Image (tube, rainbow, N blue to C red; front, side):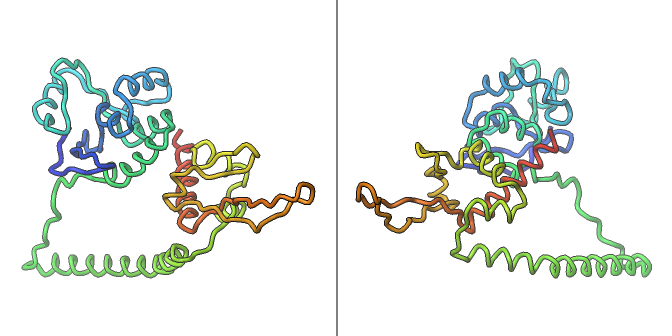
Length: 270
């Protein structure tokens, strides 16, 4: 395992980036701290769901002389390996995702998304690219040709991505809101499946009248808002009522799309 000369901050917690066999990994202690649970719970979930974890894919188990080597190069303020430990479990990105799925809390999923972006995306830079020998005409010509080809590819990618970026910017700037049926149609998922997914992930819930309502934190985060209906007068008791209709914001549509795509990806992995 290697300690990279870099730290990251996720949810106001700072930790060192570590790799094992050139793969970004986390210790059980790191995972428990970020997911808002305790080490014993992580270990218990692993034990109870051992059939869903595959060695070298979801985790690495380090023992013996290899473990002793790790103690010498890893221990610092952010990552500690107990001198009494006889083995060490290191979790890969897929292992961290599996634990988030088992815990199934908003904090675990939110933290995993951040870890996915800023921790597990880091790749080891084992060497710097070698400069060509420009005194050799043939090597210089090859280097120029490779640079020109790379530039052409980059320009093509920029041209292809520009319309998508512009469309996304337009969506983000619009003040339009959407019902879940419109969102489901846009994403390409059944409305009933989308509703169940959002309920399971605790983004929304059904109130006493079985109406769908957003959880407060997702209203604060700008994913949903409540649109007030016109005043309705009951023809029987004469009382006036106002109803709240849940709507998805443009920003919320992008977040929900990401959630659906993430869920589909996890099902394929599982």
